[in-house]
Image (cartoon, rainbow, N blue to C red; front, side, top):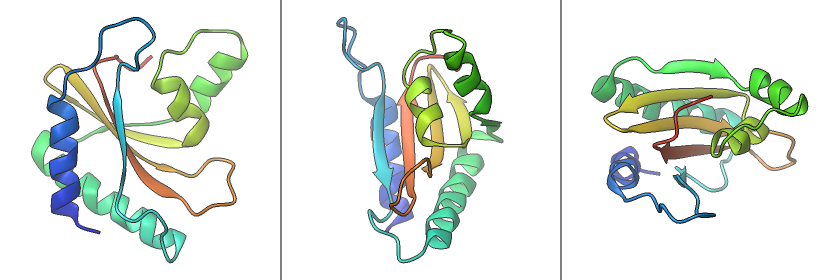
Length: 128
């Protein structure tokens, strides 16, 4: 686990071209830190450490829960990707707008028996 390497990975995702062809994902994503944390608390601490570094670079993030997105999707509203995916995997998102991209940091902690994972998504798609 190396925060500097993960920040470089985020920079690479932010500058990578997003495919424009129909059906292609209009975002890039990656798991940060360890794939299997010894304890869930370690995962959340790592997310906080990465968030601090991103905040130093880009300012305070927008923070929001995904409950509203889940409710809107349940009512039949179309939620664009990657936001629909994030709303099913995570409960809270931290999002920074950087130039023409959104960087979203979260912990995947949805309905799973596995330990949580720190997850980043970079997309030009505005949050709904």
